[in-house]
Length: 303
Length: 255
Image 1 (cartoon, each protein chain N blue to C red):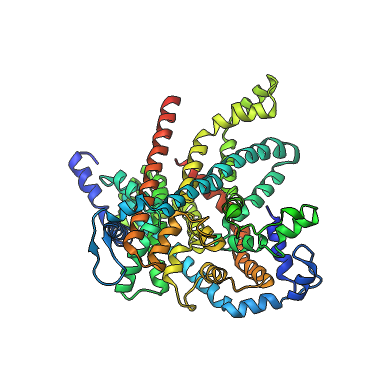
Image 2 (cartoon, rainbow over the protein chains, first blue to last red):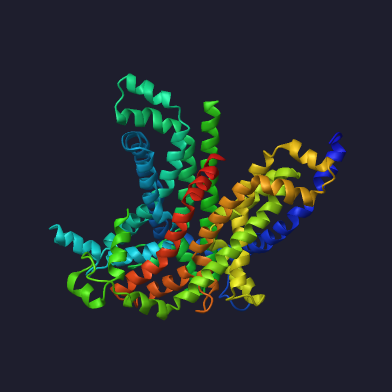
């Protein structure tokens, strides 16, 4: 690698290794993605020839109350899948490393971490089956438990009542999700210099103060990554909805990803479904850019 | 966090009569495996389990292979425009599958691959290898150059260098990827739900999800289903717990 041209040739020699990957990528991701975008400008039932309708689907979306409702529900899904788990994960990570690890040893801390992480490895469908059964209106474990501790009046058709369905789904999501931020934050905490904590302790900082002034600023990069990752996951929350509520009752838990599925495979209004999927994709891309920008600025300031 | 698991195990071991009499919270009076057996037979669980194993296993191996090839060109070959390739690939991972699923369904139909396990294996090999390429490229771009030069001087060609020098060194990362791809594919739902409609091809998630959607199950059968569904992943998790948390943190710190 002496001259520029030989470096260029040298690099080109690696190109064949990229060919299978690029071909497969084009066929499985690139072309379908473009097809979906194209279809979103058409009226198509999935068979026959699509008719070009320009922006009609998007105009219809703009005035589709159900669609807007599905996005509002998704905001709550983000709270349940990203924001709450991140906050709880932060506190738990701090408690596990700061208190449990110190007083009961690292084994206790990592055993607890493993238990909390466990729901993360379950297929969401299975978690959904477990919970829709626990939350069942008659003889469901949650209602029976409420009765047993004298709160029987709170017993409820958790997933079947439009007023509580989305909140119940959020609760299940929190249970599924906390493990992910917890594991990331605990490993992030390991690279924090212990002398920072010691210094804070000598200065008389309480646990809450150490948490707020040492832990959070130190693992800010991890917080960003976790929030980005879980928010994107929340926008794609399909199996949760499919298994727990199927978007019901009365659309109370409908989200864009489920809404597009319904149009694709139940209403066979593929053009409209594609438009929903396209809007969802644009939202994901926009969010990713915003997050990465914020993160870049943050890192820039620290330097 | 673990209480739901305990409740599931309790009730999977009860008879329907016992469930009605004592409710979901009471411990089982004995070991009744009827619920589990009924459910196993009704779904053909053995078959479904085999499908999941076959699909996830193939995807894990193929996606690691594809990632190795991609990452070799990008991380070690430092091909021009590699940043763009990486950004593009990462898009594949963040893109909602909703925006791919109908065209994929349509194309699979056209190619006669609809309702085959092969179609799902191809799709997930590509999706998982997108992340794998991203992770492995950054590992490989930090690869010790003198090792490569030494091998070249010894007369090894690029293909030999890849398999005899690079792959052995990055093997720990490959193992982590293998485990993750397996679990991720195992847990996938939307695309398998649409692609695998016949009972013969369904995965665990799809078979249970469809059944649940129809709400045909009684309480003991639900818990038997949940138990059978979660057992394989829990066993897998217990075996690979360390690998998993290592991989998770490796991915996070890379950012």
